[in-house]
Amino acid sequence: MINNQKNAQLWRMLLLWSLLLGLLLAACGPAVPPDADTTPSAAGEQTESGSRVTASGLEYIEVEAGTGAQAMPGDLVSVHYTGTLEDGTEFDSSAGGDPIQFVLGQGSVIQGWDEGIALMREGGKAELIIPPALAYGDQDYGPIPGGSTLRFDVELVAVEPAPTPIPTPTPDPPTVVDPNDYTTTESGLKYYFLQEGDGETPVLGEIASVNFAGWVEGGSKFGDTQDGVPLEFVVGDGQILPGWDEMILLMQVGDIVQFVLPPELGLGETGSGNGVIPPNATLIFEMELLEILPPPPTPTPAPPPVSVDESDYTVTESGLKFFTITEGSGELIAAGDLITLHYKMFDESGLQLETSYDSGQPVQLVAGSGVAGPGWDEALLLMSSSSKAQFVLTPELAYGDQAANAPTQGNLIFEIEILDVVKAESE
Image (cartoon, rainbow, N blue to C red):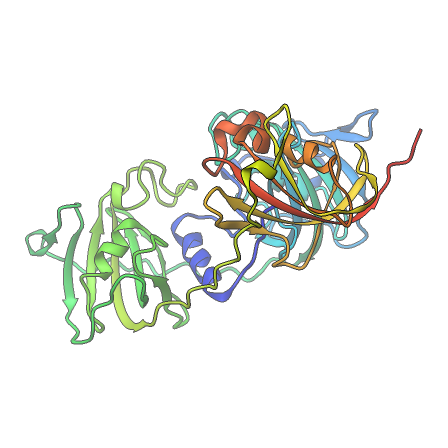
């Protein structure tokens, strides 16, 4: 139920992180080891069930054969996907948004993706069953518990020739600054002004437009703004690194500053995850504040959920609280029925967290399949075609066995509109 909306500013932010973290927009985990074989020849043997298990342990199930170009390492691929845990809990999806793009075989995604997509042709659909060793290992990753086997339904939308590589940044070193000339703040940020401007100083919430270059202390340059396109970020929103927000608040338009970030103000103990920036690295940046732009417009808050008196809820044995907003027609939904619906999700305060209405694309799921969690399965069986309802779920009802890793705190409020019901075929 994740809506992957994009805009130009977000793309710029993600481009910066591709320089800082070595990740693409859809990066899903650790890099592929350099000796990993991700070519179609590593596809392994086909089992009786029609799936193929590769030498690494990836299980590949072809759902629909593609007729276009074979995906090869180095190609730019576009992929739609839905990821679920073994119990059917969905943790991520590109549904309702654009397909993700990445260069195949570059370690931009988890190893199971690089290996599985390389077995496909353009237009094909497949299911990838990825063991922990090819995903996130024993470490927790957001809603994904450590040691999880992951299932991805993937569609290879497009395969394009390898893009022209971005030229390697010129290995020019940072400006030499006498250590005694730095000013050091309480947080450990060190800075020295290479050029002083006379413009305004940004405040929290405004947009800073900057040029920058970055180096690992004692190492090489890992990135900079290119092609004359500055980076823009909202001051104080933590969009880059903690030290960036602190530094920009000390600058005026026209300033050029060199600043040094200790690990706790940079990428910390993890580094970039791909070896470009090692763990516990001290980072050196040189940044020019070009201009200050007005704060981004405040989005119009979404309307709150329908107000329901506590006494009007029907409370089931599981703790589900259910209220019918609009009566439907026809038979009640049964397990196995294919449901088309729109939904809204709110936290306990009434703040809207997600909605399918924004994308204009309703969601389809099979009632009772466990894909959306136990609370949804129970609530849907209380509804019928054209009905609207509100129900309140505890974390356990919303996330099942993964409640301890839930990305939100407290109960969740859902409002669902049933658009269509296709009854399951009776045996």
